[in-house]
Amino acid sequence: MKRIISAALLLFVTIGTHAQHTAGEWSVTPRVGVDLSKFTNDYVYTSVIDGTKKINSSYKEGLTAGADLEYFLHEHVSLSAGLYYMNMGSRYKDFMTEDQQGGTGSSHYRTSMDFLQMPLMGSLYLNNGLAVRLGVQLGRMLNSKTSYEMQSWTRDDDGARDYAAPIKSEGDIVDEWKQNFYFSVPVVIAYEFQNVILEARYLRSFTHPMKADIYKDSYHSTFVFTIGYRVM
Image 1 (spheres, helix red, strand yellow):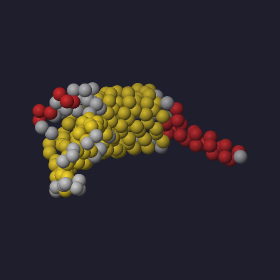
Image 2: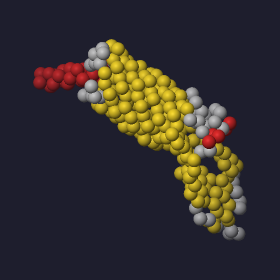
Image 3: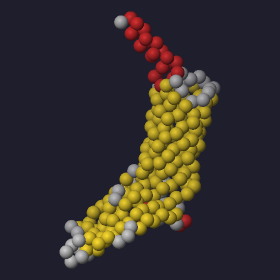
Image 4: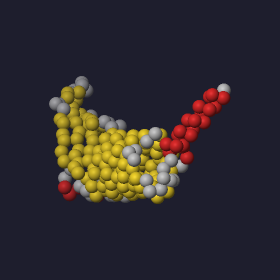
């Protein structure tokens, strides 16, 4: 029992040691992970035989990769600046429009936006490797596109469906709609052990995803999950 207690105390001390930082310390943390993003208040109405149906936007997965440069003002307080590539956007679940004569089904409907992002963060380090961060995040859109698949059908006299050939479409968002600047407030919780950092981040933008009037009440909502390694 004494050996178990001693091992547990040693592990606690080890965790505490790896979580300690000193004033004046600099570090670089490369990170890679995934983000889940969508446009808020974004939806379409479709016509179906028994009425209309509202289809809300859903979260789209994307890649996040980059690095942070961090400076410690105090063993528990730091400032950092980062540079990231993020693939963001939004999507719809499969939906269809239908009447007595036929209909059209839409699938894999996605808006994909590649961003260069710069988070500027302040961090508070708690005990046992935990940290919370708050700041602002500025971004520049590099490119954007929409893609979807459609297939229509008609009904014969017996009600059977006669399908047309499926259509795949992909194209850039028109320049008049592009919102090249991005601004958000990120809230972060992180855990560090032996220089490995697991981080969960939520971003709420204050810029609309596009300039068109139909997006005047829409914003980016994004969850980011990364793993990084601190290099001193």
